[in-house]
Image (cartoon, rainbow, N blue to C red; front, side):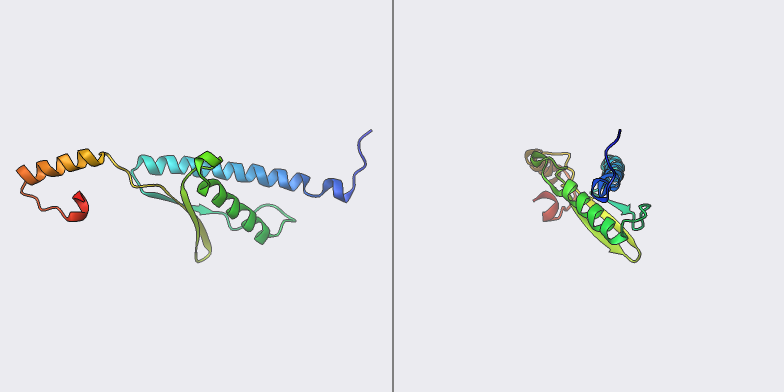
Length: 135
């Protein structure tokens, strides 16, 4: 015979599990979008977030607070602490909400290589580079 069903035995079980699955799937989608954005040499990803949820009985505001804070924790927490190690923030634009995930500027050269190549340009090129490019 099964356990007696009471409000306290039900409360939080089903909805928490469903919300966790929903959150994991959204994180997976954002991760895929980050890989694509990085492959396109973009400095960040601006990803649209849901503002309406298909969880009857859970207030929309509660879902937004839970989901958005969970995403910020996952993407802002350092890798050594189990997170993704990015810089992330949530922005609202009218009726839309986005997560902006950023990473350090991409570099194809070490500082030494950059200095050497800037020297080549200075010696042989007739190009005037701004200080911020070579410095």
